[in-house]
Length: 104
Image (tube, rainbow, N blue to C red):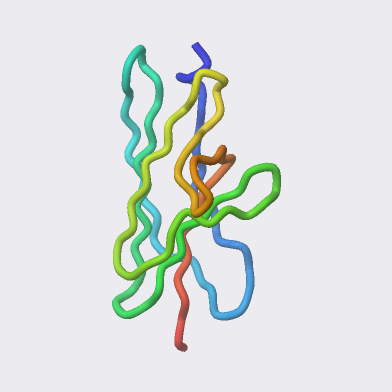
């Protein structure tokens, strides 16, 4: 069953400006007939803006931005592709990343 075959890597963010990696954690569970669900949390340092993003076919995708801990849920679909939220609606992902700004 394709929805049991996905992986979702947490990679370093793309380089640029005052962006540095933030802590990313992942919990994997299943729904329905064993389809994989990935709950990913990005946590930045106190007072730093956190950006939660990802990639698909080499293109950067913004999931959300904010302060503190940000969590999003991704699901392995029936085609064996990870889907999750983005700033433009439900999107397919190859990987995700956690970043934060630094004032240092």
